[in-house]
Image (cartoon, rainbow, N blue to C red; front, top):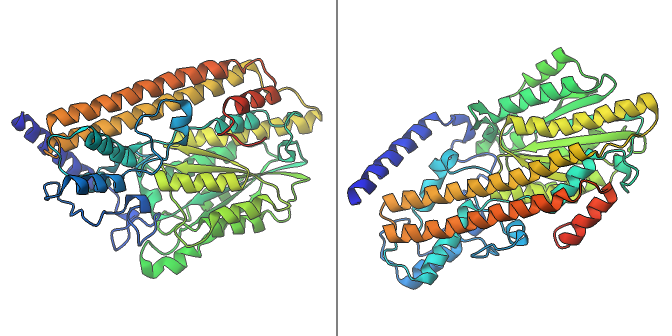
Length: 477
């Protein structure tokens, strides 16, 4: 068995070396830090290195010291066993949530080395170990509020929606605020996030009705990820394509002006977007904003407060916050930004999912065009469109559960092959992990069955049913 584990360890090492050689250098600054995360902090506060931990899995530690080290690695509020839908929704995401073990090996392996070596664990040690692993790999499951947000977008113009932002107005304007920080050079499905975003933006703008307007603002595209360039980079938020109808050549030239390079000034960009739209009051304009970011604010601004002020202005925009492969801490911040703006948050992983989000804006624009032509409202929440939304939600839940299971299984295999844990201990952890997958898949089926009952309901009836079933997880609409 030790020979087999040794062979696995060699394979994992070769895979790591190959992955490292393919990573783009532009995603790190001179100090080896990712400029889309705070330069002075490599891990979020909940993942700080315990004082007694040396990083050596074979270091001499008492049982109490090992338990304490594992407690520090775990996420506060994470139950050992998630048994209800609410357990999954309310559990905090792990550090590498939103990504995958395979794409984050260079960062994951040093974290695994912080785990204390254990040969014959008792039940308490095993549970602490599993919770510590969830502190790294627990995924963020979509909550019921996202269903309401999607229904709201799909039912734009419906008189049942008691929100003036979703009424048809004289003009339709879209502003995209795009992250151009260094981490956007990371690859997804063989293409950098930046290239994927540029292609999706071009396709989206081209699909808009001729009368609609579009604008593009980018941030973090100057300077570099070095500390010496922080002031320059944090002050870089530029309207590269002013609000106007679509012009293919002009937009393409605007997209070619920048590449991913610096920090992430989200708050400053939201403040500038408020200025961009200042002459487009919400009583006469439908103002749609797409904020695309793959990390948290790194320029000492307050994006939550900036989003709140933007939402409360006379512009009254519909704000869509799109997290592009964002990790756990980034997801939490972007969710708060969306909540403060009264908008929606969604996590995506690739160009297709980004294009899907832009397509929602396209669909609303097409409804607006028809309204302008006919000056009347037609029902938009059909059974077929509702079924597509429901299937998508349940499928996403199931996909997230499988990703979480895969990441934990990969980590357990790596630790077993490296002799950090025994074969028996690895089997016990895998059993816990597989039990959680089975429960999560069951909850996905239950959610789909519940949402299926909403197909024949009006928008208001559907929202009331969701709020009643998940009263603690949704806000008033």
